[in-house]
Image (cartoon, rainbow, N blue to C red; front, side, top):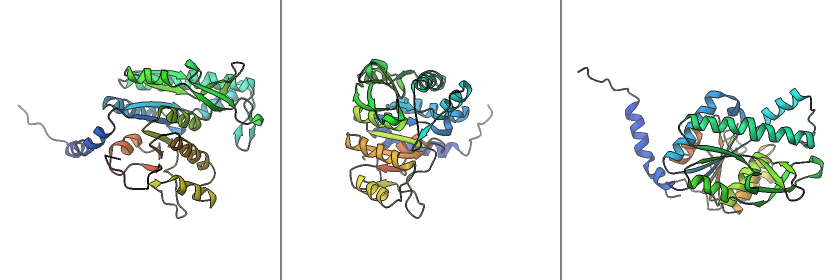
Amino acid sequence: MRPHKMNQDWPAAARTLSEALPYLQRYTGAVVVVKFGGNAMGDDDAMAQFARDIVLMRQVGVNPVVVHGGGPMINETLKKLGIESQFVRGKRVTDKATVEVVEMVLSGLVNKRIVQAINDQGGRAVGISGKDDDLMVCEVDDPELGFVGRPVEMNVQVIRDLYNAGIIPVIAPVATGVKDNETFNVNGDTAAGAIAGALQADRLLLLTDVSGVKNKEGQVVTQMTPEDVAMMIEDGTIAGGMIPKTETALQAVREGVRAVVILDGRVDNACLLELFTEHGAGSMIRTARAITPTAED
């Protein structure tokens, strides 16, 4: 019999698994809402890796709930259809024609692509939108923006039914209106925060295209309280596109989410690094005073 030559990476992999044990135990049965978006959605390899991470989370006893965006795909489809996009304060004006395209792209193309990627990795995923079972009911967020919704009623039992059955929910941020059965487009981060709050999730992971919330010196702040966030917004340290993300985080924490993490979705295995290692992978926002995360945290 030929002796089997050991790969030098195997001991390190085994050590990593051993060190992850307390964290695996810590998150058994936990609900973790993951907002997926950004450049990774358009890259087949990144999509496959994300799907593999989600399946692994489910395999070790976590209940992952995926909420996704799809802005680039919406832009591409609108352009093909000759529908011009208008923006107010950086937000897309969503008229009747645009919201129909948004629903088609998010609930159809994008949602089913993520579902297929998870299923290809051995998971069991089912795609729904905020309209299914009146999961997410909205009012108009800003009249100038048209059919852009702000969640005012959440009915998350359908999500619980899915993950209790061993199925990974994948949710498109399209919602029903309070009146006249209107369809609303909902910002993906906003939808993920509302869903996490309604589920009283243990974690909300907001995957972004940046490394996290940075201080004035450009360093990522790994632990933050709501008071820290408010101060950094007031003095301009948190600015631009990071403001709505941190505001979503604050609202989710107020609604009972144990912690929200803004992390870089471009980093390989970002979700696994955040949940199952000592150091984490982004900026954590929670009401408890900032301490280094532990398996008991």
